[in-house]
Image (cartoon, rainbow, N blue to C red):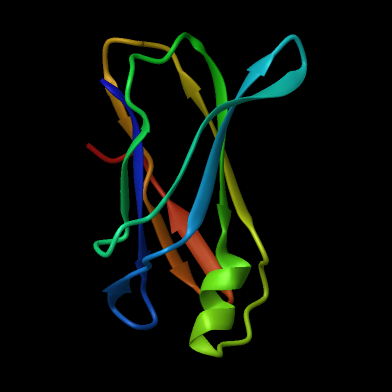
Length: 110
């Protein structure tokens, strides 16, 4: 159960380590903090929200500007935000990010 994520830098073919991540939950039209962390050496944040989430809309924001700055790479997007719905709180929600300096994609992982 819970919410986790990881980032793969597809340009380098490597995990993106040290990226700050925030998780928010939408409540009554406002975004409330629900978790935060950093990606580890494998690009993973396994316990972004370790407990079972509630039925709601969530937003994960990745602060990727600092990551690309550390690499000396010019990037187009300073942050990436992914909004998704939790409809079955007993399930685990894994939201990966495939990243490069000028684009990204995501999907629901397992």
